[in-house]
Amino acid sequence: MSSLSDLSVFVHGILAGTIFNGDTTAVREWLKLASSTGSLYSLVGVPWEIFRANDLTPEHPHTVDIYAKGGGAYGYQSQMSVLDEYGAGIVLLIAGSPLAMQPVYDAVLATLVPALDDIAREQVVERGYTGTFVDGAFSPCANESAAAVEFNVTVVQDVDSLVVKGIERDGKDILASLHEIWGVTIGGFLAFRPLKARIFPVQIRNEGTLTMPDGTEKRVVREEWRLEWEFEANGNTELPGAGLSNSNCLAWTVTDWLYYGSEPVDRLVFVLDAETQVVLGLEIPYLRSGVLMPVKPL
Image 1 (cartoon, rainbow, N blue to C red):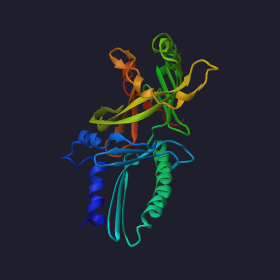
Image 2 (spheres, one colour; image 1 turned 180 degrees about the vertical axis):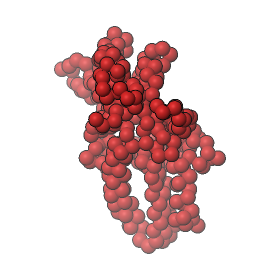
Image 3 (cartoon, rainbow, N blue to C red; image 1 turned 90 degrees about the vertical axis):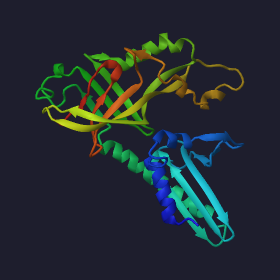
Image 4 (cartoon, rainbow, N blue to C red; image 1 turned 60 degrees about the horizontal axis):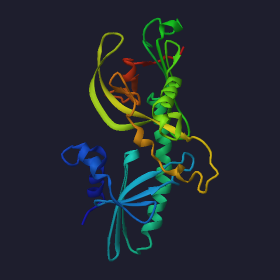
């Protein structure tokens, strides 16, 4: 029989990527569906019972994937769930009536997930993912002359995710240019156009060093993110079923389609302090930006 301690250690190993001898790729492959079901909200993994809930975070609506495995015997029930998006897990062991598990489990999910979502949004701000990042922000002249700033990138958080609100280089609007490039390339054969430039982490982290403005070397983690456009359909129609396919998410198919200088234009890298996990800067590889530092308050 497994105990709460046994299952908690097991779930922690999944979330930390230490299971499978620390092979994080194997963990990500394991947390994948193997088949679908007749329900929009239930998928089958090996051995996962995957539940896709879309009403757990009413203030910030989005789909939450729950990788779960339930079990039971006469008089006993168990439930183990992994919330990979939030780095959290749930382990429940119940003795007695089989009617107890579902309401207790639902109550835990309905209470825990919104709280985790609020904490995640707070941590994004506290750790410095939002704000304005500029070239040479730590130099003495950074706050003295706008001309000293070649790059200017602004990242904000809205109700859904982090958003790149602006990218400027030498006063030129790079985001507007990306919209124009879309129109004459991918936009020539896809019936939708980009709106907001949303960004998401892709679970790729590489350790290294960064030379700070004072010449010291600091251990850092380079965290990979991707820009995923929020799209709007082009054109109107009076045909039956108009807009039916709008809920079919195909944005993932255009990831890494556009390159400049051998770099995808949707790749961003946050540079974090390896010890504190606080953001030290932001890189936009296709613009050869180097590390853009967060602006200090004036």
